[in-house]
Length: 267
Length: 90
Image 1 (cartoon, rainbow over the protein chains, first blue to last red):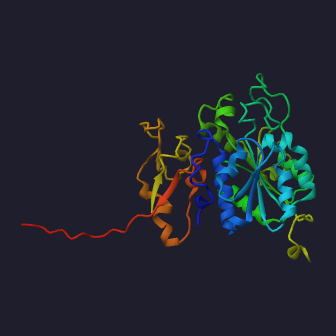
Image 2: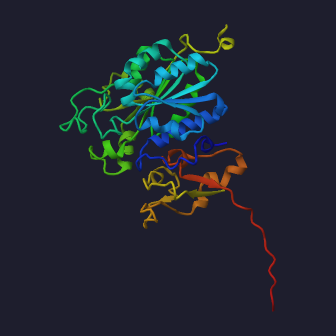
Image 3: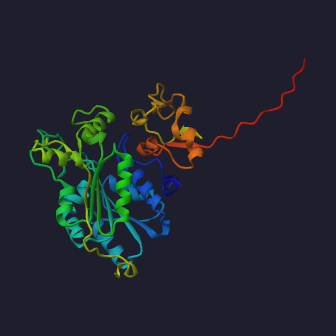
Protein backbone atom coordinates (compact mmCIF):
# COMPACT_ATOMS: atom_id res chain seq x y z
CA UNK A 1 0.00 0.00 0.00
CA UNK A 2 2.55 2.54 1.07
CA UNK A 3 6.20 2.64 2.04
CA UNK A 4 5.24 3.09 5.68
CA UNK A 5 4.76 -0.63 6.18
CA UNK A 6 8.39 -1.23 5.17
CA UNK A 7 9.60 0.92 8.07
CA UNK A 8 10.12 -0.41 11.57
CA UNK A 9 7.62 1.76 13.39
CA UNK A 10 9.12 0.91 16.78
CA UNK A 11 12.53 2.32 15.76
CA UNK A 12 11.20 5.69 14.55
CA UNK A 13 11.86 8.59 14.88
CA UNK A 14 15.32 8.01 13.50
CA UNK A 15 18.49 9.69 14.74
CA UNK A 16 19.12 11.89 11.68
CA UNK A 17 19.35 15.63 12.33
CA UNK A 18 16.37 17.87 11.65
CA UNK A 19 16.24 18.50 7.91
CA UNK A 20 18.64 15.73 6.91
CA UNK A 21 17.90 14.52 3.40
CA UNK A 22 18.61 10.87 4.08
CA UNK A 23 15.07 10.28 5.32
CA UNK A 24 13.71 11.59 2.01
CA UNK A 25 15.88 9.15 0.05
CA UNK A 26 14.73 6.26 2.27
CA UNK A 27 11.12 7.24 1.54
CA UNK A 28 11.72 7.35 -2.21
CA UNK A 29 13.62 4.05 -2.28
CA UNK A 30 11.02 2.27 -0.19
CA UNK A 31 8.20 3.67 -2.31
CA UNK A 32 9.94 2.26 -5.40
CA UNK A 33 10.58 -1.11 -3.71
CA UNK A 34 6.96 -1.18 -2.58
CA UNK A 35 5.71 -0.55 -6.12
CA UNK A 36 7.75 -3.53 -7.36
CA UNK A 37 5.53 -5.83 -5.32
CA UNK A 38 8.41 -7.78 -3.78
CA UNK A 39 7.94 -9.83 -0.66
CA UNK A 40 9.72 -8.62 2.44
CA UNK A 41 11.39 -12.02 2.92
CA UNK A 42 12.97 -11.83 -0.56
CA UNK A 43 14.49 -8.37 -0.18
CA UNK A 44 17.80 -7.60 1.51
CA UNK A 45 19.17 -4.16 2.33
CA UNK A 46 22.94 -3.85 2.76
CA UNK A 47 24.87 -0.85 4.02
CA UNK A 48 28.31 0.15 5.23
CA UNK A 49 29.18 2.80 7.80
CA UNK A 50 27.97 6.37 7.91
CA UNK A 51 24.84 8.44 8.36
CA UNK A 52 23.23 7.04 5.22
CA UNK A 53 24.16 3.51 6.17
CA UNK A 54 21.96 3.57 9.26
CA UNK A 55 18.99 3.35 6.89
CA UNK A 56 18.56 -0.48 6.82
CA UNK A 57 18.17 -0.43 10.61
CA UNK A 58 14.84 1.30 10.13
CA UNK A 59 13.53 -1.17 7.55
CA UNK A 60 11.63 -4.34 8.45
CA UNK A 61 13.40 -6.64 5.96
CA UNK A 62 16.57 -8.60 6.66
CA UNK A 63 19.56 -6.32 6.41
CA UNK A 64 23.33 -6.24 6.76
CA UNK A 65 25.14 -3.34 8.43
CA UNK A 66 28.70 -4.07 7.44
CA UNK A 67 32.22 -2.69 7.72
CA UNK A 68 33.23 0.69 6.35
CA UNK A 69 33.24 0.73 2.56
CA UNK A 70 32.57 -2.99 2.17
CA UNK A 71 28.82 -2.84 1.64
CA UNK A 72 29.22 -3.78 -2.03
CA UNK A 73 31.54 -6.66 -1.18
CA UNK A 74 29.01 -8.09 1.27
CA UNK A 75 26.18 -7.48 -1.19
CA UNK A 76 28.15 -9.38 -3.86
CA UNK A 77 28.41 -12.30 -1.46
CA UNK A 78 24.69 -12.25 -0.72
CA UNK A 79 23.84 -12.12 -4.41
CA UNK A 80 26.24 -14.94 -5.32
CA UNK A 81 24.97 -17.21 -2.53
CA UNK A 82 21.28 -16.53 -3.15
CA UNK A 83 20.69 -15.08 -6.64
CA UNK A 84 16.93 -15.19 -6.06
CA UNK A 85 17.11 -12.44 -3.43
CA UNK A 86 16.65 -8.78 -4.36
CA UNK A 87 19.57 -6.83 -2.96
CA UNK A 88 19.49 -3.05 -2.46
CA UNK A 89 22.59 -1.27 -1.17
CA UNK A 90 22.37 2.00 0.76
CA UNK A 91 25.64 3.84 0.88
CA UNK A 92 27.10 7.28 1.34
CA UNK A 93 29.79 9.19 -0.48
CA UNK A 94 32.50 8.57 2.09
CA UNK A 95 31.59 4.92 2.15
CA UNK A 96 31.41 4.39 -1.59
CA UNK A 97 33.85 6.88 -3.07
CA UNK A 98 36.60 7.08 -0.47
CA UNK A 99 37.22 3.81 1.32
CA UNK A 100 35.08 1.57 -0.86
CA UNK A 101 36.12 3.02 -4.21
CA UNK A 102 37.82 -0.12 -5.39
CA UNK A 103 34.86 -2.33 -4.49
CA UNK A 104 32.61 0.07 -6.35
CA UNK A 105 34.69 -0.02 -9.53
CA UNK A 106 34.78 -3.80 -9.57
CA UNK A 107 31.12 -4.19 -8.72
CA UNK A 108 30.39 -1.98 -11.76
CA UNK A 109 32.84 -3.97 -13.89
CA UNK A 110 31.30 -7.31 -12.89
CA UNK A 111 27.85 -5.79 -13.38
CA UNK A 112 26.31 -7.67 -10.47
CA UNK A 113 22.54 -7.50 -10.26
CA UNK A 114 22.38 -4.97 -7.42
CA UNK A 115 20.73 -1.60 -6.93
CA UNK A 116 23.06 0.90 -5.29
CA UNK A 117 21.51 4.05 -3.83
CA UNK A 118 24.24 6.53 -2.92
CA UNK A 119 23.23 9.40 -0.65
CA UNK A 120 25.84 11.96 -1.57
CA UNK A 121 25.91 14.69 1.08
CA UNK A 122 29.35 15.86 -0.05
CA UNK A 123 30.88 15.59 3.42
CA UNK A 124 31.63 13.07 6.17
CA UNK A 125 28.58 13.92 8.25
CA UNK A 126 28.77 11.38 11.04
CA UNK A 127 32.36 11.98 12.12
CA UNK A 128 32.16 15.75 12.33
CA UNK A 129 32.26 17.28 8.87
CA UNK A 130 35.59 16.31 7.34
CA UNK A 131 36.03 16.88 3.63
CA UNK A 132 35.14 13.88 1.49
CA UNK A 133 36.17 13.05 -2.11
CA UNK A 134 32.93 14.63 -3.33
CA UNK A 135 33.26 17.96 -1.49
CA UNK A 136 32.96 20.62 -4.20
CA UNK A 137 35.85 22.98 -4.85
CA UNK A 138 35.80 25.98 -2.55
CA UNK A 139 33.52 24.49 0.09
CA UNK A 140 34.45 24.69 3.75
CA UNK A 141 34.74 21.71 6.06
CA UNK A 142 36.69 20.92 9.20
CA UNK A 143 39.64 19.56 7.21
CA UNK A 144 39.47 22.24 4.51
CA UNK A 145 39.04 25.43 6.57
CA UNK A 146 40.24 27.67 3.71
CA UNK A 147 38.05 26.00 1.11
CA UNK A 148 38.51 22.69 -0.65
CA UNK A 149 41.18 22.97 -3.31
CA UNK A 150 40.70 19.56 -4.92
CA UNK A 151 38.25 18.86 -7.72
CA UNK A 152 35.27 16.77 -6.64
CA UNK A 153 34.70 13.17 -7.62
CA UNK A 154 31.87 12.61 -10.10
CA UNK A 155 30.50 9.25 -8.99
CA UNK A 156 28.01 8.85 -11.83
CA UNK A 157 30.71 9.35 -14.46
CA UNK A 158 32.84 6.79 -12.62
CA UNK A 159 29.99 4.27 -12.66
CA UNK A 160 29.40 4.84 -16.39
CA UNK A 161 33.09 4.42 -17.17
CA UNK A 162 33.37 1.30 -15.01
CA UNK A 163 30.41 -0.30 -16.77
CA UNK A 164 27.25 -0.06 -14.69
CA UNK A 165 24.07 -0.89 -16.58
CA UNK A 166 21.89 1.93 -15.26
CA UNK A 167 23.14 5.22 -13.87
CA UNK A 168 20.95 8.10 -12.73
CA UNK A 169 21.45 11.14 -10.58
CA UNK A 170 18.75 13.12 -8.80
CA UNK A 171 18.59 15.27 -5.73
CA UNK A 172 16.52 15.23 -2.56
CA UNK A 173 14.38 17.96 -4.13
CA UNK A 174 13.34 15.75 -7.08
CA UNK A 175 11.43 13.13 -5.09
CA UNK A 176 9.11 11.82 -7.80
CA UNK A 177 11.89 11.59 -10.36
CA UNK A 178 14.12 9.84 -7.85
CA UNK A 179 11.41 7.32 -7.05
CA UNK A 180 10.96 6.60 -10.77
CA UNK A 181 14.72 6.28 -11.26
CA UNK A 182 15.06 3.82 -8.37
CA UNK A 183 12.18 1.80 -9.81
CA UNK A 184 13.87 1.66 -13.22
CA UNK A 185 17.06 0.64 -11.46
CA UNK A 186 15.33 -2.17 -9.61
CA UNK A 187 13.84 -3.43 -12.86
CA UNK A 188 17.13 -3.30 -14.77
CA UNK A 189 19.30 -6.42 -14.60
CA UNK A 190 22.88 -5.65 -13.74
CA UNK A 191 24.25 -2.97 -11.46
CA UNK A 192 22.05 0.11 -11.20
CA UNK A 193 23.63 3.12 -9.58
CA UNK A 194 21.43 5.95 -8.38
CA UNK A 195 23.23 8.93 -6.93
CA UNK A 196 21.07 11.20 -4.78
CA UNK A 197 22.46 14.57 -3.75
CA UNK A 198 21.21 15.30 -0.24
CA UNK A 199 21.50 18.26 2.07
CA UNK A 200 23.47 18.00 5.30
CA UNK A 201 22.36 21.01 7.36
CA UNK A 202 24.45 20.21 10.44
CA UNK A 203 27.87 19.68 8.96
CA UNK A 204 27.78 21.02 5.41
CA UNK A 205 25.15 23.74 5.39
CA UNK A 206 26.22 25.28 8.69
CA UNK A 207 29.75 25.87 7.42
CA UNK A 208 28.79 26.96 3.91
CA UNK A 209 26.41 29.84 4.48
CA UNK A 210 23.18 27.86 4.28
CA UNK A 211 21.48 29.09 7.41
CA UNK A 212 18.26 27.20 6.87
CA UNK A 213 17.64 23.73 5.47
CA UNK A 214 15.54 25.21 2.70
CA UNK A 215 18.46 27.41 1.57
CA UNK A 216 20.55 24.38 0.72
CA UNK A 217 17.64 22.70 -1.06
CA UNK A 218 17.13 25.87 -3.09
CA UNK A 219 20.84 25.86 -3.96
CA UNK A 220 20.78 22.21 -5.05
CA UNK A 221 17.61 22.84 -7.06
CA UNK A 222 19.06 25.92 -8.77
CA UNK A 223 22.33 24.14 -9.56
CA UNK A 224 20.89 20.98 -11.08
CA UNK A 225 21.00 20.82 -14.86
CA UNK A 226 18.84 18.33 -16.72
CA UNK A 227 20.73 15.92 -18.95
CA UNK A 228 18.59 16.85 -21.97
CA UNK A 229 19.43 20.50 -21.47
CA UNK A 230 23.12 19.66 -21.03
CA UNK A 231 23.09 17.77 -24.34
CA UNK A 232 21.37 20.69 -26.05
CA UNK A 233 23.95 23.09 -24.66
CA UNK A 234 26.76 20.82 -25.87
CA UNK A 235 25.24 20.72 -29.36
CA UNK A 236 25.05 24.50 -29.53
CA UNK A 237 28.57 24.79 -28.20
CA UNK A 238 27.60 26.73 -25.10
CA UNK A 239 29.88 26.43 -22.08
CA UNK A 240 28.50 24.39 -19.19
CA UNK A 241 29.03 26.06 -15.79
CA UNK A 242 31.36 24.06 -13.58
CA UNK A 243 29.25 24.17 -10.43
CA UNK A 244 26.18 22.56 -12.03
CA UNK A 245 25.18 18.98 -11.24
CA UNK A 246 23.90 17.10 -14.27
CA UNK A 247 20.74 15.27 -13.20
CA UNK A 248 18.65 12.73 -15.02
CA UNK A 249 18.99 9.24 -16.42
CA UNK A 250 22.62 9.32 -17.46
CA UNK A 251 23.10 5.80 -18.81
CA UNK A 252 20.95 2.81 -19.65
CA UNK A 253 22.46 -0.14 -21.48
CA UNK A 254 22.38 -3.92 -21.38
CA UNK A 255 25.83 -5.30 -20.79
CA UNK A 256 25.91 -8.94 -19.69
CA UNK A 257 25.03 -9.06 -16.00
CA UNK A 258 26.15 -11.35 -13.22
CA UNK A 259 24.09 -12.91 -10.45
CA UNK A 260 20.84 -13.37 -12.33
CA UNK A 261 18.98 -16.63 -11.54
CA UNK A 262 19.64 -19.37 -14.14
CA UNK A 263 16.10 -19.68 -15.49
CA UNK A 264 15.99 -16.01 -16.44
CA UNK A 265 19.52 -15.91 -17.82
CA UNK A 266 19.07 -18.66 -20.42
CA UNK A 267 18.29 -17.06 -23.80
CA UNK B 1 -9.06 11.45 4.13
CA UNK B 2 -7.37 13.97 6.35
CA UNK B 3 -3.79 15.21 6.50
CA UNK B 4 -2.05 14.72 9.83
CA UNK B 5 1.39 15.46 11.25
CA UNK B 6 2.79 13.01 13.78
CA UNK B 7 4.11 15.28 16.53
CA UNK B 8 6.20 12.50 18.05
CA UNK B 9 8.25 12.21 14.84
CA UNK B 10 8.39 15.75 13.44
CA UNK B 11 11.69 17.54 14.08
CA UNK B 12 10.55 20.90 12.78
CA UNK B 13 12.72 21.22 9.66
CA UNK B 14 9.88 23.00 7.79
CA UNK B 15 10.67 21.29 4.48
CA UNK B 16 6.98 20.55 3.99
CA UNK B 17 6.26 24.30 3.94
CA UNK B 18 8.42 24.53 0.81
CA UNK B 19 7.06 21.67 -1.26
CA UNK B 20 3.26 21.79 -0.98
CA UNK B 21 1.78 23.38 -4.13
CA UNK B 22 -1.23 24.60 -2.09
CA UNK B 23 0.96 25.87 0.77
CA UNK B 24 -1.08 23.94 3.29
CA UNK B 25 1.81 23.70 5.72
CA UNK B 26 2.59 26.90 7.58
CA UNK B 27 5.52 27.45 9.88
CA UNK B 28 4.40 26.89 13.45
CA UNK B 29 4.60 29.53 16.16
CA UNK B 30 4.63 27.69 19.46
CA UNK B 31 7.03 24.95 20.56
CA UNK B 32 5.44 21.76 21.76
CA UNK B 33 6.38 19.71 24.83
CA UNK B 34 9.65 18.53 23.25
CA UNK B 35 10.61 22.06 22.26
CA UNK B 36 9.96 21.51 18.56
CA UNK B 37 7.99 23.98 16.47
CA UNK B 38 5.71 21.68 14.47
CA UNK B 39 4.21 23.19 11.28
CA UNK B 40 0.55 24.09 11.32
CA UNK B 41 -2.01 23.01 8.75
CA UNK B 42 -3.77 25.81 6.88
CA UNK B 43 -7.15 24.55 5.62
CA UNK B 44 -5.97 20.96 4.99
CA UNK B 45 -9.19 20.08 3.18
CA UNK B 46 -7.65 21.66 0.04
CA UNK B 47 -5.12 18.80 -0.27
CA UNK B 48 -5.49 16.93 -3.58
CA UNK B 49 -5.00 13.52 -2.05
CA UNK B 50 -7.55 14.21 0.66
CA UNK B 51 -10.19 15.26 -1.85
CA UNK B 52 -9.69 12.88 -4.75
CA UNK B 53 -8.01 9.77 -3.35
CA UNK B 54 -11.17 7.69 -3.24
CA UNK B 55 -12.45 8.98 -6.58
CA UNK B 56 -9.27 7.96 -8.44
CA UNK B 57 -8.45 4.97 -6.26
CA UNK B 58 -4.73 5.70 -6.11
CA UNK B 59 -2.23 7.93 -4.37
CA UNK B 60 -2.24 11.47 -5.76
CA UNK B 61 0.54 14.06 -5.34
CA UNK B 62 2.00 12.87 -2.02
CA UNK B 63 5.14 14.98 -2.39
CA UNK B 64 4.96 16.15 1.22
CA UNK B 65 4.91 12.56 2.46
CA UNK B 66 7.86 11.60 0.25
CA UNK B 67 9.84 14.70 1.15
CA UNK B 68 9.30 14.58 4.92
CA UNK B 69 12.64 13.22 6.18
CA UNK B 70 11.09 12.08 9.45
CA UNK B 71 8.13 10.13 8.03
CA UNK B 72 5.81 12.34 10.06
CA UNK B 73 3.17 13.17 7.42
CA UNK B 74 0.36 10.73 6.76
CA UNK B 75 -3.31 10.64 5.93
CA UNK B 76 -5.96 9.31 8.23
CA UNK B 77 -9.35 7.99 7.20
CA UNK B 78 -12.27 10.06 8.39
CA UNK B 79 -15.52 8.51 9.48
CA UNK B 80 -18.34 9.34 7.10
CA UNK B 81 -20.73 12.02 8.20
CA UNK B 82 -23.71 10.65 10.06
CA UNK B 83 -26.74 12.79 10.70
CA UNK B 84 -27.82 12.65 14.31
CA UNK B 85 -31.40 12.79 15.44
CA UNK B 86 -31.93 15.73 17.66
CA UNK B 87 -35.06 16.04 19.67
CA UNK B 88 -36.16 19.63 19.61
CA UNK B 89 -38.32 20.77 22.46
CA UNK B 90 -40.61 23.64 21.81
